Length: 426
Ligand SMILES: Cc1ncc(COP(=O)(O)O)c(C=O)c1O
Image (cartoon, rainbow, N blue to C red; front, side, top):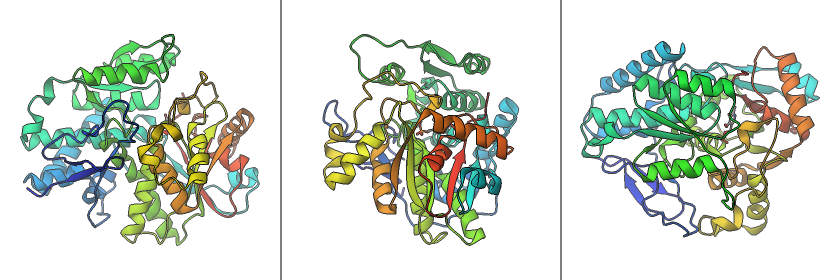
């Protein structure tokens, strides 16, 4: 069987996704200070087919599809696996995966005082109301493929629960997809999780563990409890690339859709402003635009502009050090760049308050290669962005989901720009 390789961008370990689960890097040792993340090694491949479901359209760029083909499943088996899951998603939550809209928002650009074109990619109508479902659909498709192909690595999978640490959009996405796949899920949430979200998680059948901060413990307690569950055998079904290399890949479909649209419009924006929490979204976009460039869909990637809040900005802090140091050692001296935010963060954009930007390295490297930057926005910027988005567009996104646009307000682009509105307002 032709291997489907993932390589760790920190230690170089290589995993064949047909022979081992490409989740956490097998070379990771506690305390080694290496930034371990398994990244799919892409061959040159056809980017698109004439289909509206991104998991069908961009199949050739998805490692689960390549695993299916390498394991001897026919292409029709992929259609079947994606199609069944999609039907189940519609039954569970009313929506399956379709290319999401991207519009040029002139009134919003005017209100923000920018003269260039402003594209808004709207993920609020995506499965479970945000882009997060893209990340997790990639993981679920891999699980389904290795089961269907009867690979030895799938042997005891069915008795293992899925696990995720999140209090918002990622948890909802995980719960919807887990329910559609009929796979039991544990969700680790903070004590102040939104009651509406918790109620929906229960409705979807997720088992909930409330995780309080423990005195003297650094880092997000939900993430720490999630790690313990994974250690005990749960399947990492979260959106941190460090815990599951596959999670980033599905998110790349968002960049492919945007790239195709830019190509159709004949213009790539100068910058894409992205709200950054754990970093999966920005790192997926960075990888996706790089692939879209490599496969000739667009001529160059837009500059990646990472937006964080003053309440919690570990990536902006890492970027300063990375940009200053040249950073050849960044993957092997992680704690010099990235460490948990010291104070308990608070912000209107509560969905991007991750103590650490887990997927930071892919992001800062892309910021450097595309000429991007990091922006830290204030609470008034976040509030204004949220209000303007509601006033000047029909999209109802949460303040977390309009935080990238707050970056546009705080540090306007020189020319055209794109933002992603995600996380439907609840
Ligand atoms: C609506 C929305 N946008 C963006 C993000 C940021 O994603 P990431 O944690 O991958 O950086 C989140 C994360 O929860 C989110 O809910």
